[in-house]
Length: 243
Ligand SMILES: N[C@@H]1[C@@H](O)[C@H](O)[C@@H](COP(=O)(O)O)O[C@@H]1O
Image (cartoon, rainbow, N blue to C red; front, side):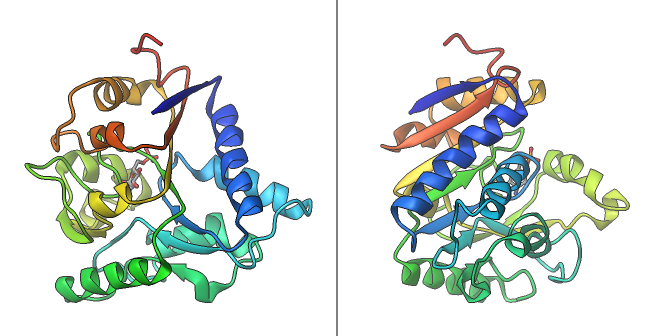
């Protein structure tokens, strides 16, 4: 695991965008695993800027997103489908047929999860997986648990996650209670993983996840076992670690 110290959120975002750009330049038809949340927004902004300058071509890139709220229509501005279009896909020359996100509108959880596992398998796996991390160490929406989930699964969101995400909804009652998420097994099978993390509020979990014991109680801790993980964290997020 490489831990790269960034000065601040913008520096973290530029460094992460550089790594994604290199992936797209080296393999124009790569499969990017993408994430939502506030952590990767700056990375997407930077990639859009470089695309607009003519430095990047996404026309052959395929994507697979980590997760989606169960039961939220795609048209809802808090769905991850909407988020990805709004923050990234609508601004680059990506082919919309090549975009994949778990189907939050599919009420049959077993079907939604099996379909998504099949889609990711058909893509031939993920070349570069971008990840943020929740305050409890969740990746995608894989919440702390007794086991590491292998494939796509339907999760009950923890109170702390609902609390953290309520800022995006009109009220806490509107935050969905469940989500479909790519499993830890699938995340771990990505060829490369890039984690972006920033802010003082993430400092305790950064220490636990990347320097503590590997346990499903801190889902991101399993990344310590992956052969090619780069964590880009800003000074605040690293403030409790001795590097
Ligand atoms: N499902 C997403 C995760 O993929 C994301 O990593 C996490 C952290 O979000 P933020 O980057 O806003 O702290 O939030 C959500 O719960």
